[in-house]
Length: 501
Image (tube, rainbow, N blue to C red; front, side, top):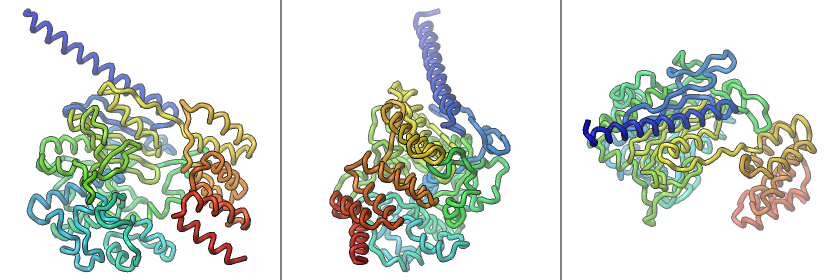
């Protein structure tokens, strides 16, 4: 045997061993997360079309002890937007539209004449997200299921300025993608669901992928049950379809398409990934265009974040700023009780597909850690949020015990983290659930922990006002406005309370 052959065999064996060690570390990462109830779902990792790692963890249905498996069907949530982008770009490549066409070219009664298809695809339109658009309508008509057909009429009566002038800034809005679904329907003369099935799911051989618009009656026997802690002070997970706080998202907004509501498996998403690389769905040049940062009017790339990492946004894809390991694109998704992550290192043809049906927010970090492991980069350790431990202790054992817990975990910055927004949300949740004294304790503590953030004073002032402590509320709102003179809500609250005197 020649020295060249011996060297080739040796190197092949060495590479196989190296990959084996990496996949063992990936398995160890997810196994440890699952053991600590920080992951419940499916993961699939590929490189150059080959599956390197695939495994299921936890329960598809916790109550009935049905385990997750390769056939488990999960909610893609906002990862569905990549299909909508793909559909629009297919139509563009067929000459049906131009990205810089105004939306009014196809929908003359659309109230914002300067908004283009590109603005919608890149989230640079300034259009409000539909929860903001329809919140009042849900209150007045709680049994209505809203659909894409309701959006343009609602925008016509919105009577408020856009968040910014077109392409001056970036702001995520599901409404953009619902409008794009309307566009696909108009140009294809098919329902959006029919178009995506015929021109995306079928050529990609995604046999288990479908739209789910009726959350009470799953369209697949393999559909997982979504669950999460309803509140930061909850001790046990709950099925989201039985929790009243999620009704608006799961029921009233269940008729929208384009922005989400696609169900799939990790295996089908691998087929989609393979089809993208093979050029079966879009030309490579078009796909590269979609995965390039959008430039604003000032010439700079859109600025956002993907799971806490600096990124830009293309046409339906996040584009990570850090290219140390290659060009990484993808999308995150989240609905009550479910999270999804689709990551593609297009430079090295590495893809991670990750689904969780217990809303374990740390899975995003785990997903990025997998790519770090593959590419010899350091793993970012998971830090457990203190808020839930503090909140549940507060409700079950009282203020003093919760304070001691808070002090204990604040000193362990390696393993635990405290988030101002989460603490703020905990206080609001307690207030909404009539735990007034505990809510005030949390919001007061938040002003001490984050004294330079105007929002903590604003929230504390709101709570004090609600329980009738007007003088204290006025003082808190004053602190908020001093820190942020643009705080219009605080200025309005001060005006109203002073007027009452």
